Image (cartoon, rainbow, N blue to C red):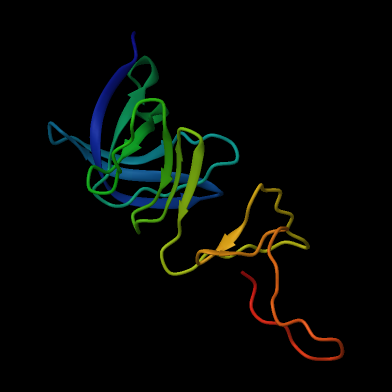
Length: 150
């Protein structure tokens, strides 16, 4: 018997024993329960309700069903050919276009590390040079503070 496949709309996502499962409804009205989400190692993502995906049933067996190719048309950003974007339903993005990587974090971006190293030809903060070539004005001997970098 050959594999069967059907597209479903997800109406529930949940974890059991460290694995992610979804329930949903097929485009022809059939119900699917506890369908294993096929995820790559090192990548974890829970789809939002209303997302669609492709359920594959090896040998036509629903008990072996798994879902892949999940996306939500309301959240997926447009992506040019050859580019990649990691995104979520809250509008946060990591875009990899041409020679640039852009992080759109929304309210805040947090880095938690013992140390942070940046190697760059230039470094700016709100348009001000804070890199290795920045200079301070108003330097006086003693314990006085310097002016802001420029």
